[in-house]
Length: 308
Image 1: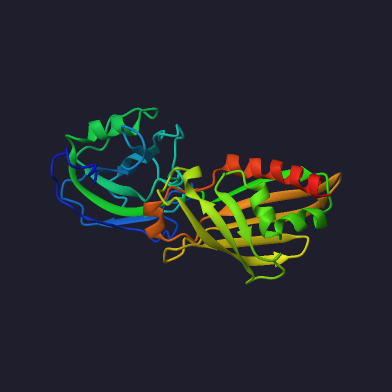
Image 2: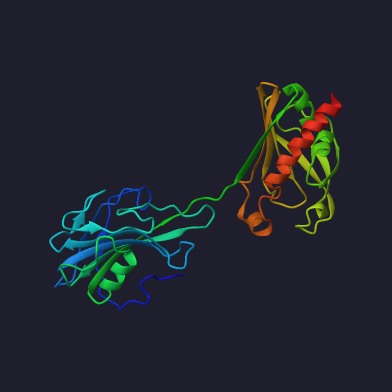
């Protein structure tokens, strides 16, 4: 893992702490206190840096220069004069909180107090944090670093909607019919189904599958059980799929129906938030892409019209 200090001269460490529970999230700079700075310290600088950002140079969230040597703490949300905050990589002269890209994994945030041997580091107020770092490289007596992490979960649910010119009852009649699921399938995987129309959560029916239609996993033809997880007549139906492997994948498909002018607004959703790590390593999600959900809604409209 990238160490932002690996190419810098080694210097003594001292201690920094914070009482800010939100560090590093939010756009309010954290409270910081530090002790044990080396003898000869004439000023401090403070930086917050993300080496895990998807750039060639990381991401600077905060940079403060010319903090007097008599100051050993910063209150939340401000810095003392004559210290000043440089523009960060969002080009804001202040603090910008952590916001890792969704699904990019955990990012580390290095909050560092730099003890310097000069009162004025000589960097202009519109300088960059990188310029500050370059100027400090030959004036740093010690560093105190606090590391925090943050992560933004990836998108784990797809929703698409379409107005279907039919009653909710007519749409629901297709969605509760096992063969209706086959009729509206846009993936090409569903070959046929056996079972009675579902009426309540816990009902099941069998679907005959052909995974070669997707070409993602060499499973060929096989059967799965569709298990209804939610059913409110005329309003919502959802289900999961139990196949031949254990544990079951755990993704959920569903439809919500809302009466609207001209028919029924039908929302199709696919949720894989409960899928375990074992399956995430074996299968690329979403198995059914957003384009297929949209196509299914178009086929649903046609199927409802033909059945009506």
